[in-house]
Length: 318
Image 1: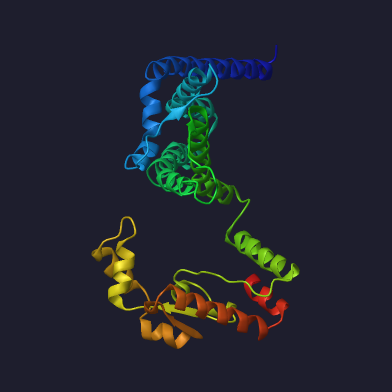
Image 2: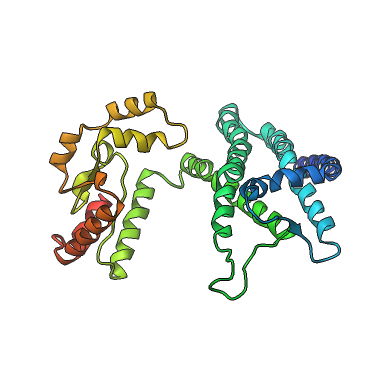
């Protein structure tokens, strides 16, 4: 057997060992998770329990198949075990590929291996603490007392269906939180760059006009500070009193007066924005006024386009 074949076999043997170690670790954690499966499921049910605790009617979770609760606990246990095993699997992957990398390549890859589970965890936390409570309240709003539907419409949530919804949302948001890592990796290896992403936006705009869209509306944060205002036919600036602006901003998570003042100093002054804007809308006058104002502006803009589609698309391509 040649040296090349020997090296290949040794690599396969090492890969096999690391896969076996990962599988054993997963099985052990699965057993531990199954022992605490009712507690884990109770943790996942907490957003639903919190959302309905003040309801006048008694809420419960039901199962309609004999094996449904057992299979749900199996799924919960595997879900928890896989979630906990992920860092160990990443470590095994790193130990397998690291010997074949140069020092600078190791330094480049290491941050991604660390950030991957952290970002996935943050995506799951977002689902648990924000998305699920909002989604539950939204779906419960479709219940009916029967006044208009002849019979009352009331939720009887199933054990496995609730778990499936939670798991799908956690995985969906966890994977979506990997997008910065994927884009960064693709940029590092040269597959994409800022020019490529700009080209994608250009193609999207061109597609809208090909589909005979009358106009395209962009919501651009820090438009005057960071973007090229010449790209746009009309610039609409929303203004309001500083007191109302602060009240609205402070309702956002993670914002306080200090951060508000610091951000405001970095922005262009309002009088300068007014000079650069084509249209100014004062949002102090309420949602209905703003809605009607924007509707009228869009109607007029569609009827009085100042540039050809080619000129608009070309400006975004530059």
